[in-house]
Length: 191
Ligand SMILES: [Zn+2]
Image 1 (cartoon, rainbow, N blue to C red):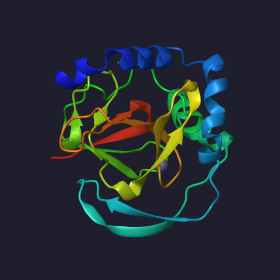
Image 2 (tube, helix red, strand yellow):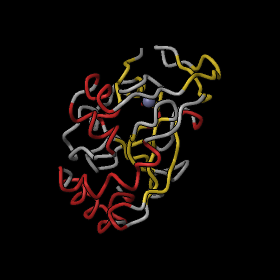
Image 3 (cartoon, helix red, strand yellow):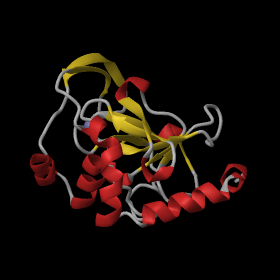
Image 4 (cartoon, protein in one colour):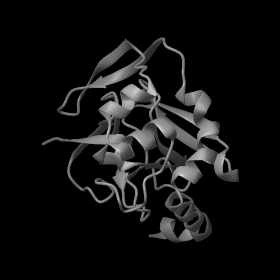
């Protein structure tokens, strides 16, 4: 609870900014992340995880690159807007902000493993929040200057999907708060 009450102003602002996400907001949101989202083809090295949530080793795989039209066909509208256009879902609107099941989260676009329920915590933000990724190799962190403030955007290493942002007001042991979008991830329940 201490963490939640320390920075009311920023949280309020982020809430407002996210709530404004729509066609008009997207127009100003897109350019800042356009470079990252349009990444060149090539190989990436990630840590693979079985559906039981166990790491099965480091693998080098071709980066998943698809056109906007292809992504649009594959994804639900909200997942498309979040992952391919760096939009933010409305807080408390997603399917996993209040999920307490044991398991882990894969990228909705490419199935790359991203976060484990072992590091999920109650952030009070209405977005699924974690204090560290399942493997640092599996994500990319990029400085994001959109909305007139400097934030660190988090993307999927394998397909460049925008996932959310990371802030430095999280709980121990890392002090980080990975504030993710439910719509960017698929939950895999484990025993
Ligand atoms: Zn991905």
